[in-house]
Image 1 (cartoon, one colour):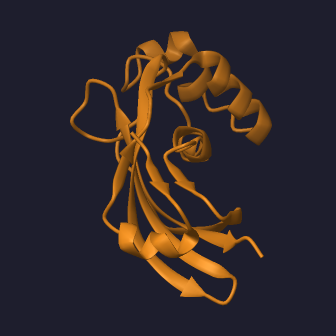
Image 2: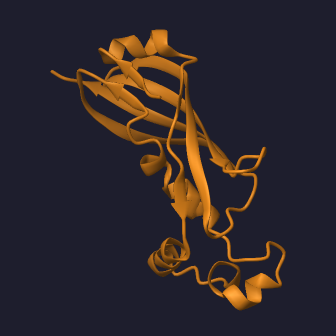
Length: 152
């Protein structure tokens, strides 16, 4: 289920609206690719044998990998007609609440927390929770800010 709005101006009336994404798998190939891209090769992410006897019983995704997947996990959850572009404006708060064990599935639940007009368009605060399938506790909660620039 997604949020579909007819204009950037409609964002203010949509505060409090939520959308839920599809489940997305986190496999070892993705964890390895992230480790290689960031040069973060900690054993807890890559050494399956050592991680099996570690605190989580298997390798885990990097917290920043989970965070970096927010664009993918939230893709299509908020559609705003009449927006020329959407710019990542930043993060206000991020909390990593639980590790994502290899071969888990995650999904995003996004809420429009705020929408304020700005000289460039509408600055929108989004509260996104990354849920972990089979768990009552989320993997991550992030408060992000996006700038929706209206078409000229």
